[in-house]
Image (tube, rainbow, N blue to C red; front, side):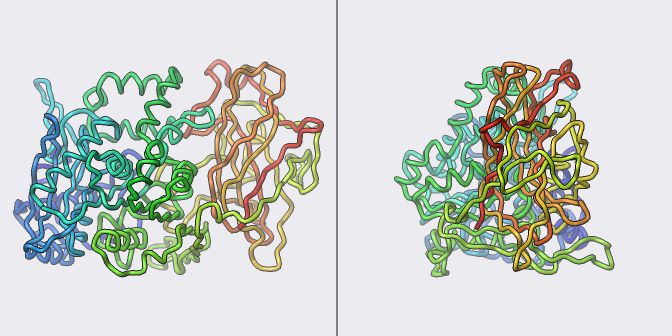
Length: 613
């Protein structure tokens, strides 16, 4: 769609398109929305604006728009925020009865507020005024032949501040607009991804303390550690975001942000990058959120590649407000994305539970929310699946188990240590055993990608997990010349589950490198009897200032997991030196010329601490 403002390029939405989006999600890749999802959103908007020259919607969607139109007025304002125009959309319910407003800052998407048009109609049906807006700088921008740019109607002015102080100001200005034009009884913020971070920050920073509740889907608590942690830069995630703004980066970011992004890419001035990220971290303002007692709902995924799960749980535990955390199977936006965007064949639990949160804390509904557990974890991969005879695709026939807990810390009830040993059941590999063994070493050539990898693709691999098809790994094909492997014997259990992994695993081992720095990436797999595996969790670590040939012992946390390992399966720990998601320590000239040694020194055991629940 070269110009989404032109109704002639919007085609009629079909039930088959809606069904396909429900199955595959709204993302074509980490940097592209599915064209059918975009078309559906723009068809809804064209219909709401009264600009559709023909019927564009399915009967169900058409009926929904007519129902909301009968009870509300739609608006498409440009809101001035200190000289920057923000594209916005409003639904104002008829009548004099005071109603709360839900303010929705758009996510990091070239289509701004339009992509969740279906959400706004749902909220209006539940009794809310709605004000959605595109954060500054976000949205499609078209270069003109003679120079300059033209923005789409849903694109906001200014440059992207990445949830910085200008976005906080914009959020407060949007509240001002809502109070003037909608006269709400209460104010709630709901956001996904970028919009969720802005929502938390505006709630904490609004000078007049006007935010009464927050819903944060696929969110972050600490932006600094989301993009740079354990000495390792999350290059693929940042690169995907930079490519997903709707225009050239030189037009979308100011010079200061461009310089910072270049420093991040090159590994320079990382203290400045961390300070920049901490300023944009809701965790930095947890004390203010607590003082304001803002009810906050979190919904994230175990295998999140943009905002890894540990920084969310750490932020969640610091909050003393009314709060709730759902953790789901999958990756960024997979659980809620389609539920916010398209009609769903049944209840979309991530979205329905968020609505219930708002209904209680903003509408005042007596719906049992105060009795909810603080945490509810969906356990990987406990769903049951079958092959659809018509499509040949894997479908979920029984949903995955969810486990409640009164706090995040109570998810883990005990731990056990698995010691890395010299020899495992496969002569090529080491073992994981309950008895300590030291004095061994395993070596591999550093610098190459391997089949042991976190994901095939950001978002897409996790979307498949969410829909019942986790990525399979052929462990016999893992390239032992570029990685090291340790495996348990088959795990026994009186029941069908041998290990209930619940929480944050931790790994301790000793590293020796032929150069002054080394990146190591640890992966934990669940291996079945046929040697195929599913990933449980992973995490990179980069060590610097090494003395070549000398040993450095390191301990670091892998990302949290809720995972059941079946009886007869084995745990496999893999360590390599490179993953497509992350920076690594080697220059091009050092690839294949540096050896990484993993060892367990005499008196210094290497071990994996496994959290159980």
